[in-house]
Amino acid sequence: VKQNTTAIVLGITGDWAFAAATVLFGLKQHFHNQSYDIIIFHDNMATHDQESLNKIHECHFIQYAIKLINPDKFNRVTKMAFSRFECFGLLEKYENVIWIDSDVLIVGNLDKLVSQNQTGFSMYRHENIPINVSFSSNVDGYNMNADCYNDGIFIINRSLKHPLQLKKWCYEKTEKFFKHINSDQAIINLLLQEFDIEVTSLDLKYNCHPENNFQNPLIFHPWGPGKFWNKFWNPIWDSYYQQWLELKGTPCPEYAKFKRQNLGLRSALKKIKQYFRHA
Ligand SMILES: [Mn+2]
Image 1: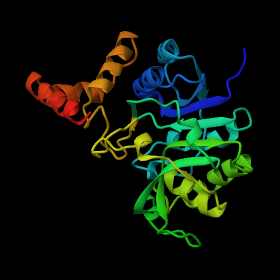
Image 2: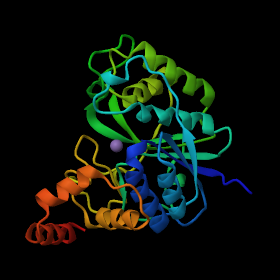
Image 3: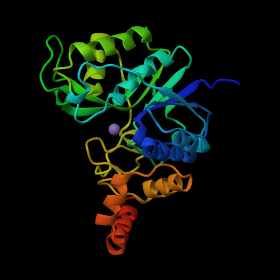
């Protein structure tokens, strides 16, 4: 079997198979100009869910083992968020590696995504939001007021120097700075400073919060605790989710509850109208 030159990487706890499914459906719909391998780092995902995901697109499943000093410290992310550090190692096998958070919704064409990356590392930059939002306390020796990059979606390629060293550094500093950091994103932003990495600013359309009134989004990403299954109801996400259920994938208990509470027929119609007004 010929290996593709591009890998798309997800990392989820076993109970987020439904979320990965919605990303795979979005990719199937909107990413056509090349073929790619899909790699899913997971934490004890049920075999039948792996089989259901394979029906959407063949996936390479990798059980992720990492011992962080204190995973309970991170209330906003699970240890699986740190599996994005594996992307650096994957550059040994792939020319391009794309990390996509599984809480996103792909709504437009991604054929130009890989070519956005001119420097080896591409991510959306939050202008005027300092990196200290990702920390509970400052780390000495770094500029904590630098603009924060959002690592929910990033693209790296072989222009990036010594990727294995970067990977090692990320894990080491996650342990070393665990008292200071709130998430993986803190470490990625320090990494940029430590290795003086030039980042290509990814356009907002590839990493756009659903509450942003941006006109032509291609990927919605509700960073923060509100997700498509508990806060931002969206008909496209819902249709992908229904397809997942048709594949007998394990449902999302939170979404069933959210729908019951918030989506009587009347409020559903209202939200659909609002959606198409903005679309
Ligand atoms: Mn996210």
